[in-house]
Length: 267
Length: 267
Image (cartoon, rainbow over all chains, first blue to last red; front, side, top):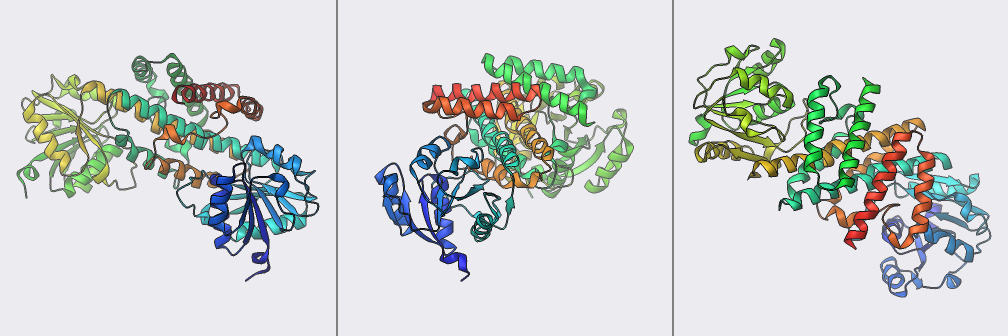
C-alpha cells in the first residue's frame, strides 16, 4: 500500500460522476468516509455502496477527511462551496468548465479533478483509459491529486484553466452535440416507422475510425467534394426537401457550408 | 453450396464500397468475373484481389455475368448506366440516395443494394452486422438480391425508395455531420497544442451508449436543463466567447437552441 491509499475522502454529490468516481477510488484502496447529497435517499444509497456514512446537510459534512471531492452539477458548486470551510484540507471539483477559483474561500489547498468522460449510473466505468485533467492551487496539492488520479487512471494530465475550458468546449461538440445528431437521426427514422437499430453499426464504426485516423481526413458525404459542386448542391437540395422542420433545414445548411469551408481550407 | 453461390458477378467501381463488397462476396463463394474502374491501375489492383479480369472501358464490360453491381460515386452512376445495356441481367447500384429508376434503361431487372456503413480501404469490413437495404424492380430480382445479401449479412431489409432516402439522410447526420464535429473538436484542441487523443475515450463511449439507450434520453450538457435556464445561458455565453470563428459561434448557437427545443418537446 502506498501512502496515498491511506488518505480519506469525502464525496460531495451522488450523481453519475460521484458514483463512478467513488467506486473506482474505493477499489483503489481509498477510504470514503462520507457521502453528501441534497436528498437523504441518494446519499444513503451511494454511502452504502461505498461503505461510508451519509448526510443531506452541508453543515454536517465532516472536517476530518484529507480530500473533499465536489462532484455535483456545475450550477450547484457555488452553493456548496459557500457553506463549506475546510481550512487546509484539499478540495477539488470535477467540472470541465467551472473556474478553479470558485474554491478559494473553501480551503487553502484546492484544485480541479476533471475526468473527461460521459458517465452512466448503471454501467460501471473503467477509469484506466479515461483522461483525468488536473489543476492545483499549489505544488503540494497537485502532488496529492496526481497520486489520487494515478491510482485509477493511466492517462493523467496537468492542464491549465484555459486548456481545460477549451477541452470542455471540444467535448461539447464531440459528445453533447454528436448525441443530438444521433437523436435527430433517430427521429428521422421513427417518422418512417424504421428502427434506430439500423444506424447503430454506422454510428459505432464512425466513432471507431477516429482511433486510427484524423477525422478531418475521414470526412465523406454530400458536402465534401468541392470538385463536384453541382452534384453536391443537388444532394443538399434533395436533403433540404426531405427535412420537415425549418430549424433542421437551417442546421443542415449551416453544417454543410461549414464542411465545404473546412474542405476548402484543408485541400 | 447453394444455387446463388454459383452466380457470377461483375463489379463496377474500385473504391471502398466496391473493394469491401467484392472481398465479402468472393469469400461467400461468388465468382467475380470482372472489375471495371475508370483507371486501369485501380481496376487491375482490385481484380487481382478478387481473381477477376479488369477493364477501364465501359464498352468492354462483359455481358455474360448474372449480377452487375455498380459501386461508383453517386455522381458517376448515370455516366455508367447510360452506356451499359444488359437486357435481362440483374443490375444494382449501392447508393443510399440515388433513385432506383436510374437503372431502368440499363436492364429489365434492376434494384438497389445499399450497405449502411462507412467503409475504409485498408480495413477489412465484416458485413455480418451491417444492414443491407434492398429494393428491386420485381419479385424475382428482389429474391436474387436477398440471397446475395443474406450470404454476407444477417441484417438484410427490404425498404422502399422514400425510406431509403430518409435512412440516408439520417446517416448523414449520424456519420458525416458527427465526423465534422469530431473535426471541430480536434481543431479546438490543436489550437491549444493539445492532442486529439484526450477526446477519444469520450467519443467512443458516447457512440457506445446508443447500443443500450435512446440518444434522446442520454442528452447532457449545457443546453439540456431547462429548469436551469440562467446557468445554461451563462454556459452558452462562455462557450460563445471561447469560439473564435463567427461560423462556429453561429453553429454552436443553432445547435444549442435545437437541443433546448427538443428537450421542451420531450419533457
